[in-house]
Length: 157
Image 1 (cartoon, rainbow, N blue to C red):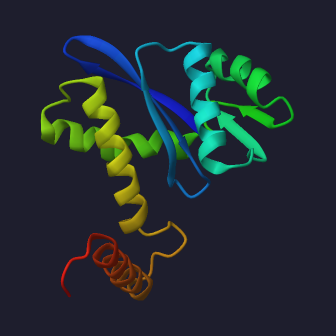
Image 2 (cartoon, rainbow, N blue to C red):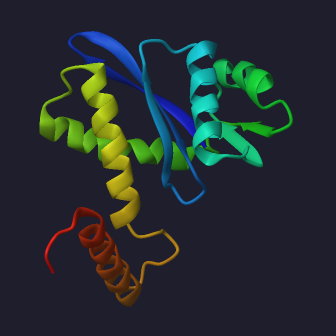
């Protein structure tokens, strides 16, 4: 699913465009000063570069920019547009909004872009997938995530 959310930075509107997979993991995020076809096209192109191959289908809300951008960038990909199909993408904004309130907003679009790229990567690592919610699965997932984190950061055991 693809979605966008408005974030106000220094009194100006900016749009955070986000692509998530079927489990709610963040695949790609970009910050744009506009909400138009060009911005949607940029999200799709960067998603293609990051993923290396086009998705089977994209799910969006009713914003027409997605359809126009998809026709240019990925004409063969199935496009589903319905207000309730992209709830996974809509819900992926909630942790960011909570963190934004804690941080008392963002100071610049660049700082938001840097923050969201790190925030999403860490969230993907530490948050357990929705289909594995037992206590044992959560415990094992967190142990593996911490081991991976320590290996990547070089932290002492």
